[in-house]
Image 1: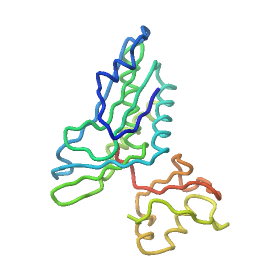
Image 2: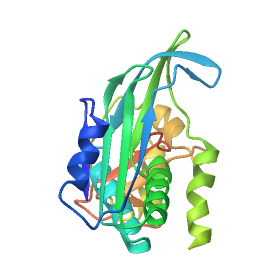
Image 3: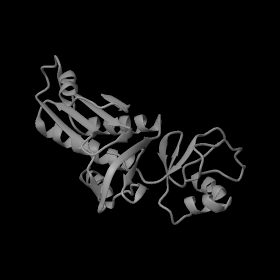
Image 4: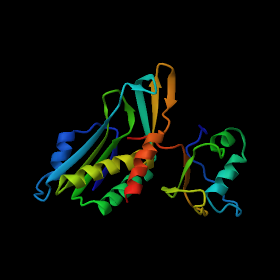
Length: 152
Length: 72
């Protein structure tokens, strides 16, 4: 289980290959890649900058991964989240989960992403035609995270 | 928003939890009052773990107030 916060881009293929290398117990790998869109809340986004809370951000994601491992049968997992300046089409976040069967990998991957959206301290500031603005949290993200609590 | 990333303060004995510390900072008025007003959706962490209003705060703790997160 690995968490990396970095400014640099990442190579999805290389990361997945490294995660599953030499482990014949892995029968399924699910991954999610978050990207920078060029529009948000009706405005055109030219660039965004991502800030985090060094120390706490890593801990928060590790805690989410520990919860995922307690709920599903996971063989390994990886989260990479970028910070700093990003432009539309750039990769922001990668979540990879490896398991014996697909059900665990799919569910844990979505759970980690839903919890990361509401519990990991990152903040986006967008540069739009009308100036810079901090992105506001979405209620839909809270609802997405809450689903997992109900399913328990 | 507050023009500062961090600040070290001596904790008054009357402040025992996150809500108490928030009230202390609101009492500074100005942008502090605006940013941390009870009506604002402010999240908090104590020693880098998500916290609630009734989470205890003691001298030496690292307490953070921030807006709802927007990563991913």
